[in-house]
Amino acid sequence: MSLDKLRYSLTDHTEKLFFSYENDKLLIHPSITQYRDLLNRIDDDIEIMPEIDKTADDTNIEFYQFDYNEAIYSKSELLAFIYASINEEWDVIEGIDICTGKSHFWLKNNHVIFDPSLAIITNESIYSKRFKQSKEVKNQEVNPYLIEQNNLYKFYEKKKFKKFRKNIDSNFSIDFINRIVKEFNENIEKQCILDDARIEHIREYFMLYDFIELRQVLSQKRKSYLKSNKIAVHPSIDDRILETIEKSTKGIFDLMHQEYNMCFDYHNETLGNCHALSILFNLYDGGFKLVQGGIPYQKNNFNIITNHFYQHSWLEKDDIVYDPALRIITPKNLYYTFVLKQDEYSKEETEAILRRIGFNLTHFRDFMNGVQIGNNETIRYRSLVNEMDSPKMKEEGEKLISLFKMKKHY
Image (cartoon, rainbow, N blue to C red; front, side, top):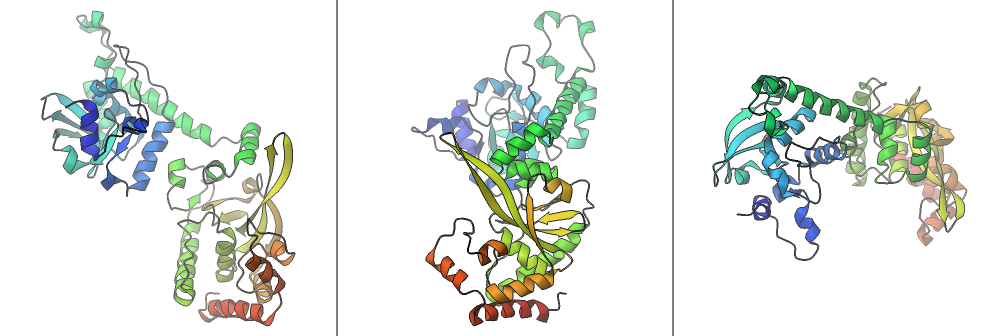
């Protein structure tokens, strides 16, 4: 079986005649797509993988996301040990190809298989139909194995020196891996650097890919972590603050689901829901002040520069910002590198406004001044503005406020 057909069979991939580029990308079996955190970490790792020296036979060593090259298949051992060295979640497996009897290496995390030499991710039950495991090197054993076996030297040993054993560098494998790990960690650090050029870049493109660069510099976390549903805490902040936040967010979720049949989730699909999440949290826990403002930015269309303002809401306690939409907890002074504060509200001030505008969890200043919120230009929205201070609005606001008070959450 050719390598391309092998890749398809191990991932249940149907070969594309049109859009054929999809045949050469990193192929993932449908049963694995549920492991989003695992897959995001692989993507993240490949993105920042340092350049790796070509082998003695002039093969480019890469971890392919696209444009798979079959020449890499014979370097399965090298790829497996490199990746296990930069990602502690994977163990190295040595085995044989059942059809050819040749040695082969891959990576395993529970029952998930990542074979970078085939550029596939699949499950163990399917993979084992072609490859039989003979030995497992646990992740914590990878470095001792490299020191003892020096097993990567053979990929870089020049043929003309093979007969002269004295030329063997006994520390080659561990030194080789340590250099890669060092450069890999340096690439992680570079992503979080915040110099003037980076600040300007983020200000110009802060909404790109779900605010990922903005969230990264504010939290100092890997992109794969930020793609999860976790709340990211900046390293300078005691992460025990999460205990308080998690308790409140769970209470809000349960309360609003029971009483309004509405889902206010502080871990999933939070982007674009900053006002509601922040307002409700402030009502639930008055120790966090509600803050509203936004992010100033410019657009350049046909050399015409226009100023814009991305309306936003977040929470503050002492010198800490909790932004429930961005799912980050960060120092206030760092946050204000990009965000402009306009108004601050205590729990009591939030209650007073909701009595005027009802169940409109929005940017208070702009709503009450009749300014468009986001892209909402509907007739219904404009009519809500006109109902401010009406008995209907007061009833809606009192209902929400009373519900929180009745539950004795503060």
